[in-house]
Image 1: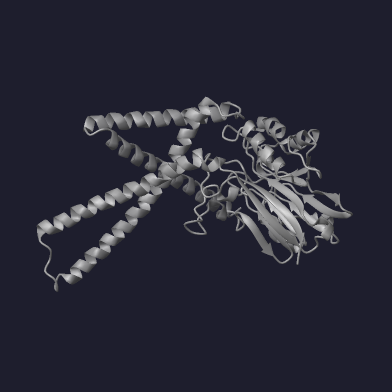
Image 2: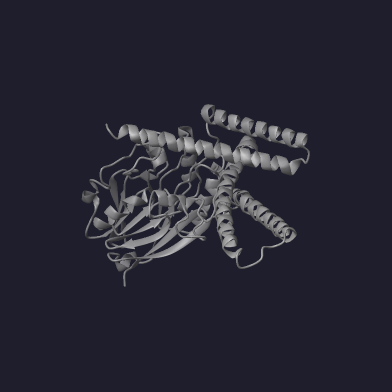
Amino acid sequence: MHHAVPNHTLRVLFMLMLLLWLVSSQVYWISRVGRWLARSRRGRLLATSLLAALLLLALAYNLTVFQLEHSPTTLTWKAALLQAPLEWWVFGSVLGFGILVIFGVFDRLARALLWCYRKLRQAMVPPLTLATAGAVSSSRREFLERTAVTLGVAPFVAGAYGLFYGRLNLQVTHRRIALRRCPRALAGFRIAQLSDLHIGPFMPEEEIRKYVGVANALKPDLIVLTGDYVTWDPSTQGAVVNALSGLKAPFGVFGCLGNHELWTETEDSITRLFAERGIRILRGERVCLRCGGEEINLVGVDFQTRSSMGRHSEGLVHSYLDGVEKLVRPDTVNILLSHNPNTFDRAAQLGIDLSLAGHTHGGQVALEFVHYDISPSRLITPYVRGLFRKPGGQLYVNCGIGTIGVPIRLGAPPEISLFELVPEA
């Protein structure tokens, strides 16, 4: 009880700061674009007023549509002309404004250091003439202005790339996974993984069908799905199930559920829909797959977490994978389907050979090529993308296919994973 008020206060303060940042970024960029469009004071006022009105109308429209309409499962003209431009603008303006603020802080620090340096040098070196100093100052201002504009505009360019190309640039990742308990009869067994479809206007049903074709063309022995088939609208579950029902593999198609199935209260209904199309969702259960006289023990769990995500507190557990101990078989290969990669530590303790997860989208907008830690997903897990090993087991985190928040991917292309199991040398 004593912690509720401080936590609530901190949350409110954070939201207020976020709102202030958003408003400040819009004021800055609208006034900046207004100055680019018109030279006269009256023209700038007219341009900024028009831009502000268009932004408010687009925002009002999108908020109204989000509340009143079902999410389309095809790319509509409304989504393409009203939703995508707004989300691209907000992405570029907020991030660009942040870069400019950081640049401005460093510029002022540099100015302060330069001022101190000049004061110290005045007694030793004659000061520059007024004309020369003015020329240097003017040149410096022009250089800084150009640099600031370039840095500030870069997120808009990157956002356009991520919108039109990055989110559709599918990567098929091939991995050979050496497992200690993999018998020679299972050597070469192939598993394809798809995750985080997030069906919607920017990941329509027809686009998902294309990825289904890509997965089938890989000729896997088994196909697994690791959650987040829908986003916010429960009515889209039928369309995503229809799209994924085309998946075919000799040993079947199995899956687990993600946080968005939990949040949209579609766990039971989408499980039934999948079952009707021959896809089995494993919910705290296992299935034994027999191959060449050997077995693979496939386990699946619902989404679980040890920390709430925003206003969502569903799926909270005291400890990960409670009750899974009885599903693990010590005499054969164990593979876990768990949407949240944070279950990996406990899975390794239980001796689960391979965990397959999603949830992070690989960061979705990840700048790990700049620095390893620049990825939003590192706020929720150390397991952002790719293969991880620790004593007792291995984990692969798939980047997923769809998007959340903004239909943009940077540094984290959509992914289908193909694993080939081999005995450990």
